[in-house]
Image (tube, rainbow, N blue to C red; front, side, top):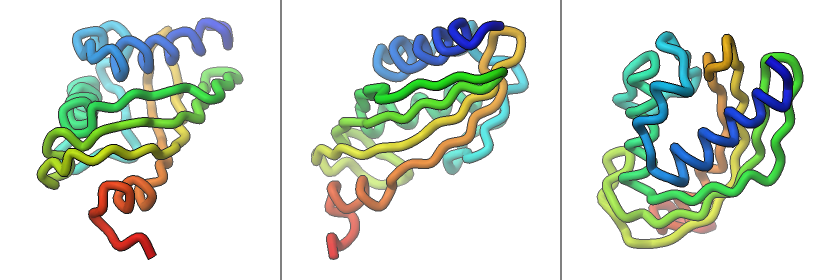
Length: 138
């Protein structure tokens, strides 16, 4: 697959699955043996685990992701993003605060056969938790 084709698949994941809340598309975009290297608590393995992750994010934070950079080389796609969210549901066992937050992160996807195969990510959780007033700000 070309770098542009891989970027288009990852872009579709962000736009349709995360922002569009269309978890049914995960079956089309992710490999059955999808590997999450940074799973959330309670997240299953494989493609079903990706659905778990998306559901936890969507139900707990009602996120809107903007892709600030998307870079592809070989079978990897890297996305630097900003997320604007409202803590409107239980997330990671934390009851909703109703507060909004804005934080950044980076995702790295490995694609295989035109599907998402592996995922690593880094997110500014400290900033998110401080904005939600779940941690002291100083």
